[in-house]
Each structure stands twice: as C-alpha cells, then as structure tokens.
Image (cartoon, rainbow, N blue to C red; front, top):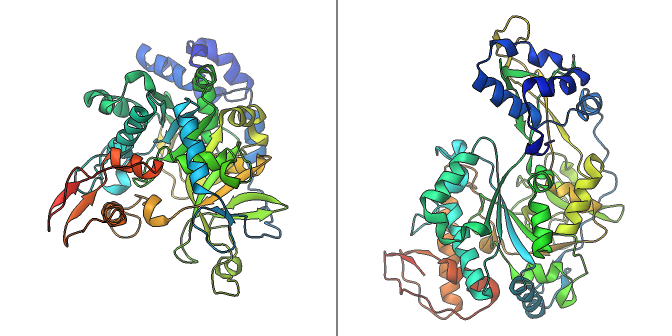
Length: 478
C-alpha cells in the first residue's frame, strides 16, 4: 500500500487525508516532534494509501471464517527427467528457447531480499550472509557471479532487480557499493523497497503508533513485490527496455539458478510445455508429509498453493497406489512471471492479491497518555500479501518438477534442518555431483563449490572445464 515518493509533503499537507480516513489520532504528538522527526514522519505517512485505509480496516477488522478448501486434486506437473505421471517436456528444446530469451534481453532476474539475518544469528541483511562452503561468498555474491556469467555469455548486462525493505535498504546498498557492485554494472542493479502495512486495533479500527512520530508497521509480504515494482517505476522501465519476463526467487536459497534457461523456455511454451507465459513455478517432491512447505494443488481446474498449515492432515498424508504422496508438489518460491501479467495483477489490486490477516502482539504508543504499551496478548491486526496468490489468477500456469539437491537449500535456521550448515553442505554435494557427471574423481573429505561460471554453464547446458582439481581435504571453488 505505497504511493509514489513524489507525493511526499509536510505533515500539514498530509493531515487532511489522514483525518478523512478517521485516523487523526496519529497526529496527536506532532507538535512535540523536531523538524527532522516531522519530515521523517511525513515521509512514512505519505507511503500509505489513505483512500484505501477505511475499506481495508472494515474488511479485516474481524477474522473471517476460513475459506473451505473444497475438493482438491494433485496438480499437473511437468518434468524434463521422465518422472512417471508427469507431463514430459523436451529439455533441449526448452533450454534453447530460454537461452534465446536471455540473449534477446527479454529476461531480468528478481530477488526478494527484505529480510534480516537475525534468526540466523547474523547482524545484517540476509543477502550479506556468508554462505559459500569453500569461498565464504555471501548469498548476494553467489547470485551476482551467475548473473554476470550469464551476461557475459549473452553479450549484454542482464538487469537484476532486488527488493529490499525499509529495515535493510541502506545496509544493502552500502554492501553492494563497498564491494564494487559485486562486479556488475551499476545500471543493471535495480534496488527498490517493498511497501509496509500499518498495524491496527481490530476493536477501534485505529492504526497504531510505534512512537510519537512513527507508525507501527510490518512489511507487506513477498506479494508486495507487485505493487512495489509499479510504485518504484521499475515495471515501466522494464517495459521500455523490452524485458518481457522476470525470474523470481528469494534470497535465502543459494542453490537457485537466478536465470534457468530450461524453466524460462518451458514458461514460454517451448519443448512441448503447456503454454503459460503468465506465471510459472518450480516444485520439489516433499521430503515427508510433515515438511513445512506449501503444496501445489488444483481446485475447480485452477492451480494454487495451499499453505502447509491449511492442508488437512488426511490430504497431507494421502498416498497413491505406489505409496507416493498424492500432494507431493512442494512450493520452493521460484517463479517466472511475465511483466504484462504483473501489470494486470497490480491494476486488479486486492481482487487479485488479497491481504492475509494475522493477529499479533504489537507494542504501541497510547495516543492520549503518550506511554508505550507492551501487550501481553495479541492486540493488533497485521496484513501481508503472498506472491503465489497470483497463480490461480493466471489464465494458464505451469509447475515444473526440479531436483531438491540441485535447486533447493533454504537458509532459515542457524543449524539443523534448512540451516546455514545444511545449505553449505548441499552446495558442496551439488558441486561433487557436477564433477562426477563430467567424469571427474571426487576425493574424500574435500569441500567443493561451483563458481558462477560453472553454475551458469550447468544451468545453460554449456561446456565448462573446472578451473581446479580438488585434492583430499581441500576446499575448492570449481
């Protein structure tokens, strides 16, 4: 729920819109603020669509009854590896088509990177977390090296859009600048901030203050990327440049190929893939029925993602005649989307990407006494959007099966499952498999990592000779 930064004015300029939205209490302490605090508060308030606030509060004040899932069926899944039951795609044809798209400048990379590394015990934006098992490269560097290699192959810089958050935007910019933009052209790097949603009291409908000159807000979710692309002007810029498709991925997965030709080609309908061109997704087979990932399913002929917490246990555990999970298609937050489709999604607004409601504890300022209140129980509504809600809106969508060990190493915990240590180990295992596939010996005890050039060559099915031969116990970047 953001507006153009050109709309920023003084508190006095914004006050009428705030009062018209019946939120005048937010200005209770305005006279106590310094000029600098007033300016910062004005910028924050100007980022809110005050015309929409009353209707959003009216709709989400009360928790609605959970929507019945209805009858669910497994999705139609495509593959290039001949998995029984899947729709087979010719990988060579899809790869060729995807490479042509990249070379023609029709594809840009898009990374959602608004999170901090706090949960990982790391102080800084999550993308600046060292993750390379041999090199110690950060998540951002892992992706940058592959995007640079793809650009060198294509003979043109490939735009890389990075969505930050107000919490980490300046730190992210400083990281890239301090490291020479990670070897990329400054112009191909497009940083833009995701929007925020104000928290509000469901009983009164009042937005909450985090301080005398600060709203209580939360990031508007990964689905906020659609609105942020528009308000930042990046969607317009992509259209002017002739970019037709975005390769979307989240920053916490070091195995994801930022630009995957076979996926992009299949997204475009090559290789016998069902023509999508609007919104496509990747899946991995769930490791177990209890794995906490959303799953792809069909309802009324439309593919959608059902969150693991919403999936009935009977369906989560259901198996087919061969003992395989019926709903095994786990979502890994890797998508391809057409720029034109994202434009239509943004124009449709909440009808296409509805908010999801959560009831949480939110510290806030008493607008009368000016004292900070630390609630002991949930007291406020937080709203966010999910990008995968765009899937059933698309006229056509595609789900492509990929191998977990090659593309999915989520980095969400410091140790254990889906952790920093497991992500590093999976990168090393993947590099070892890459070597073996090319007839090389893999000595015992070595730690391996693919360079950006090797990872790009692997994704694009190009010839590549390793730059180093590992010896037992060595840490090597190939």
